[in-house]
Structure formats: structure tokens, C-alpha cells
Image 1 (cartoon, helix red, strand yellow):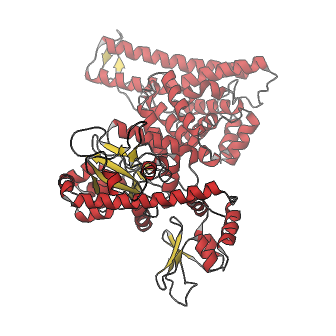
Image 2 (cartoon, one colour):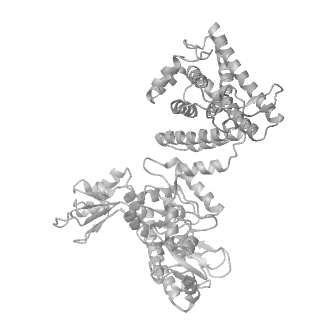
Image 3 (tube, one colour):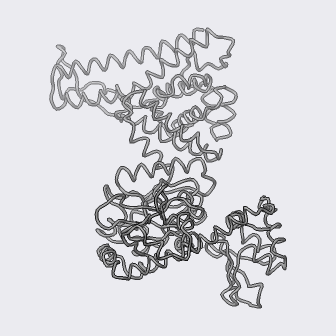
Length: 624
């Protein structure tokens, strides 16, 4: 039976090596790896390490090294196929039946690694030869050290259409085509894909070359050219520099994701070795999953231009459906117009470290992006922002996380909407006035008069409590007056928290049912304040009577809802009137005028009318 390397890689990827070894050996967590006393030789101090990301174990004492299959054969004493079958059963995979075609594909895949290795050696030789002088000059101008050139395997593809085939004449042309090194055109001889380009190898997690990125030297398009997808290389499932970053991230507990491989190389040279990059595409779900194997909260550090910020948002949208407990993304904002390499050149590693430390969470990124698209000047624009935020929440598969996102985003939404409301221009403080009017209606200073009360007095608090009790009794009113409720000045922290929870309850789409709402409020710690409000110890209105309003009393219910709407509007407007009275009073102090007096008188009349209307509604409720 022949098993393809691709199938075996998939098997290894579905297994957790530390769990397999931990069944027979005591293992301990050590950073992002595990350690144990080596089972292959006697030792008292652990030198046996297990790396779940790469899927290998290694003993620094005796040199034992292998993967899950090797563990089963060397430690358990199983034959190769028995080991594979046992592991496949654990991973939920079917062992392929004998297939001559599959065997040929496996052989072909193995040979492609050989082709890529030979091509990489040739590119490296070219860089050091006469033809590579221009490429070496370019690297020197970019400030890329010789150590970094060697570490990242820089090479050079000379200009010409038949160079690679001559250099690798031991491999058939179809193998070079399959490896992405030659381009085949019907009716014409295959020719070199990479010509006159600086060559940057792309490696898999095991450090094997599987593809290249080629940067043109001089004029021409495209500036960067990647290998096409091949049996070895899938650009949406590969992260550049993963072979180096995996080891570095275990030390730092961090993973940085930048936009391109030159950015990754620049960061590595500056000491940020825990860095990877996608390959010419926005970050995919598969790449996010690979990143999560190295760090719980990878930091996306994309370019500061519009394209980079849009790429960050696309990554956020792709991450939301697949986030799970403890795993998310963070976003670092570079200065406008700069990429990471630019920032390093201009300000050094300290500046980049500061940018990384100031990264924001995934929920912050979603909120900032959507808020920036909204002006919140109209009810329609506010509704659009709310719909956009809830649209993101609905994509989250994890129900617990979706609930937390909904609560967090709605808290921010209602906070901003309240701050933007024209009814909340300022809050009042108690102020005494020693101004009075003359018999002719002119404003006069220095004459005693009764102080003008513009404070948050007990009556105002009673109105707020009555309004909240109305929403407790008639939860359906929340869907009609949610925005007005969010603009209500609740007078104290306890009532504000209750108001905020009622808005959150509405945003969550919970049943607008009296009994269900009270049950949830008791569970959330609002039982005492809810009971107090429902006792209606303060002002009495049609919507805050001692007896509950049932659905069968439709006419009474309709009247109660109308009264609740009117009292809510008055309660929201009262702080505005009070603040305006204070403003006009100060104006009269400094620049007395008939116009200011008329405005003051008008505001006083409005406040009296509001107060009278509140009294009328309360009196009508008592008379019934």
C-alpha cells in the first residue's frame, strides 16, 4: 500500500503529538512546547522536547527524533502500517486503499521537492556569480545583511527564456512545469517563469522550499511575481517564514503578521523574528488557523495606507466566523502611508515595538471601522450603524462569543448615540440666581428674588423612575422608543445601569414579555431595583400603576403606551431646558438684552408647561 506524503501530512496535522506521547510518558508544559524525561535513554533531567506546531519530538541527550508515526514504531514497537492505521482511526481518517495512481502521485510529489531543492541551489549560486551583481547591489541598498540573505535563501534568476531547463537538465520539462518554474504555451517551447528577478524561496513548516517570490530588478511588471499553485504550494494555505517564525513565537508568545515577504525579512533583521506574511492575497481562514497554532492572538501589522487598512478589515471579517475561546486577532496601526520596513528605517525598532504594544482587539477594530463609516446625524444613519454591527455579530459561529460581542458593541453604540443626541448637550447643576425683572419686563441685576431652581430635583428623579417602571411593565414599548430611552438622563448610576441593560436586552432580540424580562433582570442582579420601581412608590401614571397591564385591556394598554411616550419625551427634554436656562441666565448677566430676556421667558414657559403636563397625566391616572 502506498500512502502519499500529502495524506501523511494531513494525518500528522490532525494529531496532537504531546497528547499521544503523554499517554505513556509524563510530559510538562514548557512555554509553547512540552518537555519530558527521554523514554529512549535513562535521564533525570528532562531533555526530551515535543513541538505540537511542527509535529516533532527531539531529545537533546540521545538525539532521538521523529513524528507521531515514528513514535508509534520506535516506542510502541508497531509496524509502519499498523502505526498509521491506529493513528488514522484516532484522527477520524480512512486509510486509502491500494491505488497505483495514488502511488504515482506520491512519487511525483516527492520528485517535486527534489526539483525545488535543485532550483533553489541554482538560484543561490547565481546570486553570488557575475550575473548576480545587480541583485547584490539591490540587497545592499535595502540594507539586508549577508546573514539575513543566507538565512532567507536569497537567490537570482538571470534574464533569459531557457536558463532553468539547461541548469536542471536532470529533470524532465514536465517536472519543471509542474513545479512552476517553466511556463508551457501550446505550440511553443516552455520558457522560464522567473527572468531577471531577485528570488526569495517560500518554505513549508519543515523548511522545505516549495515555491518562490521573484522581485524584478529595474523596470517592468509585475513588481513581485509568485509561483503558481502547484501540488506543493497553495498560496492561500501557506504563510511565508513559518519555518523560522514558529520557533521564535514559542519564545515570545507572539506572532506578527505583515503584508509581504520583504516586510517580514525587514522585521526579522530588526530582531522581530516571530513574523509571517501571506502571499499576495488577503489573510485567509486557513492562514488564520495556522497562525493560531503559533499564538493565541496574532497581531496584524499591515501598511498604513487605505489598501492596508482594508486588508486588515477583510482579515477581521474572515476571522469572526471562526474565532473560538481564547483565540482572536489584534491589529496594530502604522502611521499613514508607512509600511513596517519604512517605520523601521525612519524610527527604528523601538517605534515598531510601540506600535505593536498599542494594538487593538478584534472587537475594537470592527467598532472603529464601522463607526468611521457613520455620521450618526439622523435616525437612519444610527440604524445603519446598528445594523452593520449586528451583521458582524451574526457571522460568529460560537454562540457564547457572539453574545459577548453583541453586548460589547451595543454598549458602545448606545453610549455614542447618547453623546451625539441633541438632547444631551450638557447636564445641569444646582444654581442660585440673584437677578430679577423690573415691572416693565427688563432684566435687572442685584435685586433679590426667589432662586431659580434648575437642579436635578426629586421630582425629576421620580419621573425617570416612573418611565423605567413603564418599560418594565410594557416591554414591547422598548422596540418603539429605544432611541429616546438611550437619551434619557437617568439621574444616578443604578438607574443608568438598568437603562443600559434594557437597551442591551432589546438589542439581543430577547422576547419583549413582562414575565421573561423580570426573570432575566433578577438573574442579572437587577431584582431589587426592578421590584422597587414596580411598587410605584413615586409618581403614578397610567403606565406605572400597581396592577399590571394585561394584553386583554387593549384600549388601556394603548393609552398607557401613549402616555409613556409623552412622559419619556418630557423627561428627555427637561435637562435640555434646564441647561438652556442656565446658558441664557449667564448671557443676561454679561450682556443684558430684550432678546435674551424673551428667550429666558420662553424657556421658563416651556418648563412650566412640561411640569403641568406631568401633573395632569399623573392626576388623570389617579382619577381612574
